[in-house]
Amino acid sequence: MNSMNLSYVEEQDKGIVHVKGDVDAYHTGELKKYVMDIIKNLEKSTLVLDMSEVPYIDSAGLGTLVSILREARLAKKAFVLAGLKPNVMRIFEITRLDKVFKIVDTVEEA
Image (cartoon, rainbow, N blue to C red; front, side):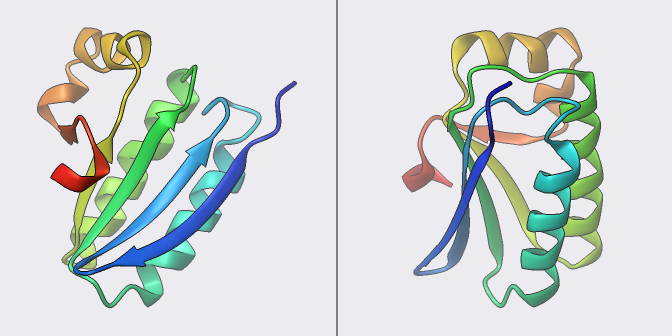
């Protein structure tokens, strides 16, 4: 089982969470807690999840991202997913979540 690695940086008008590893049932609790804590204290208007190093996501991972999106909206923050690998993007398209999330190719575009 791969471990998940999370890190956070702030740039100009956005906070960026770098996610490295699978976003699956084993790791969603850790991801959710980490990102929720950031949303609570975020002074920037936008939170970006850099998923360029996420090789795999499952239904638990998708559910977690939906609940993070809900929290971000409640906190009046924009929530953007960046750098999805083609196989991960495909899952968003199949589940129609590509219509729900703002998804960009690079963190810079967010």
